[in-house]
Length: 136
Image (cartoon, rainbow, N blue to C red; front, side, top):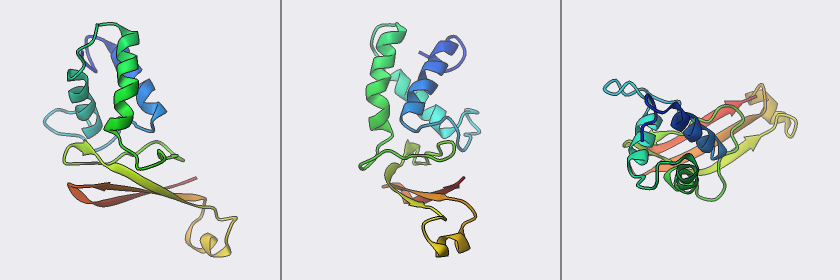
């Protein structure tokens, strides 16, 4: 099954299921494929599907596979903007945790941040840890 092209329903199905787990198709574009790292990864994941060629069975399979493919130590990220799941070595990094800072909670927070802020911490065996900061 392909993500693009012959069956756009697969694209929308995958996007819908990924969004449930805080995953988006954004990211660094691979110049060889023209896709983001996430799309390349998901295309390879779809190649592992060997079930029947119907939308419901594929959706159930993806619903089991996506959380494990985009691992989280305990809780999944609670993104305050669009998801920004980082990759290392061609694979999703593992989400370790989130630090939320409200400027209403502490006076010092307002000195550093103009809005409520969340830091998302990811680790991988292939790279240094990554911290993503989002504000609203």
